[in-house]
Length: 326
Image (cartoon, rainbow, N blue to C red; front, side, top):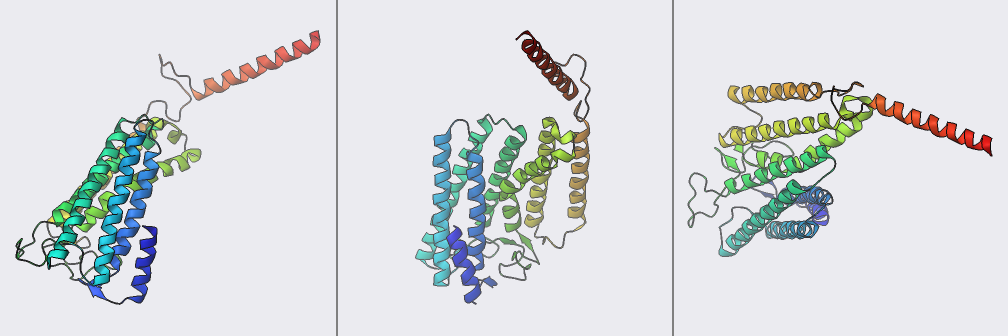
């Protein structure tokens, strides 16, 4: 995948062909980078499995193989100067697109297997465990958005149209687009929730890494319960934003031109996230406090330190007494 990303980058630099309103090598370049990030994330998650490692290895291998087949088809179509997705122009083009559809289903099913394995795995770091589980679940939902793109757009008829399916909603593919991403600037674009959902695999584990990095500066974050709750809040917020992006796209609304309803819902998600985040930090009993709840069997940090000091003092005293006797 990394090699295909490099090849596609070179193609972007030396090949000025344009297909469906975008540089012809843009699609394989973006897909290759996405598959690299997707594969590395899954490999990292599979390393946490305490059981089912063999099943996880096979599922990961299937994901890698399916992704490679899809990338070979996409790149091959670029070389031919043809679109890879939704192409029914010739029987050969149709066969290639159908093969890609099969690889997507296989990849999705293999990722589902990994999700089940992670759900049942006993992972000591609960915050990391929930970040991985929620990340895979949202990624599966994001990948499923791709199936919506294969449905006939207005004016398209299966068996008659050269192109069946589209990523834009309300406008034809290939119209005015946003820089870098290529997402539609005039209508809805299902690639947005597709992209946002699938990359939960990387972004939610990054939340855990950020919390761990902040632990030395915040006593509260040293409490595992607080980190778990913050991860769950982040996951819920991410899922809500994914749903909002999908809803916005399906209504034919461009990302950069949201209406009042979309803005109101987005504001509600932000407020709910803030309130939930505040609750996650403040509600943990004993978080950041040396005191212990009455009846609790777990000693506080201060008590642990005092016990360690007493143990050291006792050992020192016994050593001195032994030396005196000798």
